[in-house]
Image 1 (cartoon, rainbow, N blue to C red):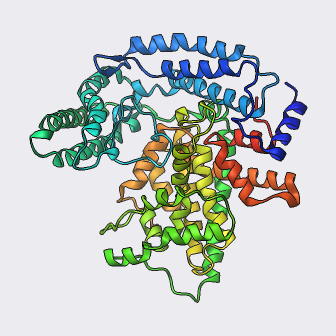
Image 2: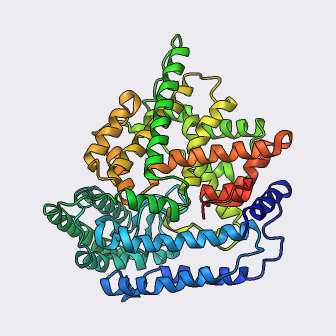
Image 3: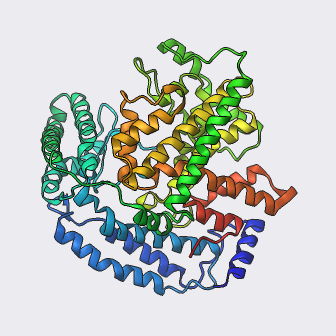
Length: 537
């Protein structure tokens, strides 16, 4: 198709905003949906004797079959399709590229000991858990006590698979990436701790059988941790994927118009910008008392009692977006209780100004939209594979913090404005550190120390697990550490482009409603669908 056709069609979409579900699908679109459904089934590993199969023979069979799916996708004629339909085709292509990259470069089943950790004690704020994960996740966060029979039935297959899966891992894992092995121990310990805590809640004859399965999974996890620590002693290789592979991944999987070098420049600029604006905010507020964190459960209760209602009231007063009734409860449910003792970086912020991280809590809005107003396209209805949504989810949430600052959310407490720039600096610093890791210029330890040193106020402490866990995730999942900042930049571009195109007709509420309705897709595809700017071919 010609670029002029793309632009005409996209601008028409921007002006009239048709309902995706209202129009009849274009010729051949049904074949894309059918292929997508086959593809999703194919992408999952086969389950043999109740255990996901990541053994070499199974992976070789998958990689042999993948080009057939890619060829079928390429054969679909998208001429004449609407832009939303073409966006769906690009999503499927990106997912297939993601599996191809896994086989060619990441090979997490062979290189990453944390890949085999399947216990999820807490709900992710993303549409799918961050980082490469084996199949058959055990979602303990969905369980309540006393445990319901349906909840026990839901987690039992995954629990039963853990001993066999971790046994299989000992044969599958042949990689030599030192940091992937050296720093997996903390993640394995977290799985063991979650299983211990869960087992402690299972009392009485009715829970005896399930508790036995949990304890078997716990024993296998603890044994696996010992094995990984022993194997790590002999690992000597780099763990980053290298600049050339990173560039390919950005372009063909994450669909971003950047290279590794571009991201370095962008994040260096954002780090400098955040730290300089923080300095100006501190100068402006120098006569005001510094914000003090809450230190007791009583102070916490008072400070957080009305944080969500205040925030929702602000969004309504500024006419920011449509606010259906399910948004506030979704955000309120994730406020959390008081945590005594040393505070990690995010608690240092949260305990000084509860509104600051409610803005980043746009994640919970995203999940509530997915659950209550699912996208009409089956391709966008659930979580996209390989976390290709991160530029949109993390980018919007990060950018939203400063956008709410600009709209006046913190006008009544000027020193809270400083926290927004502390947050941005931390995200830029950890993203830059992750880039250096992927280029094999930093070890994980060097990345953690650098990110901590570059984050203002000393709140990203090395004696806390947060900075280490973040860098371990960003090593395992390329681009995730940078997506907060590059995604923010892309979402700012989308806002600017739509304002430029609409002029006086632009309304922030209409813009945000369109963003929410489009689903959790890469930012480049939002720019195409909502602003008429096609992505790179």
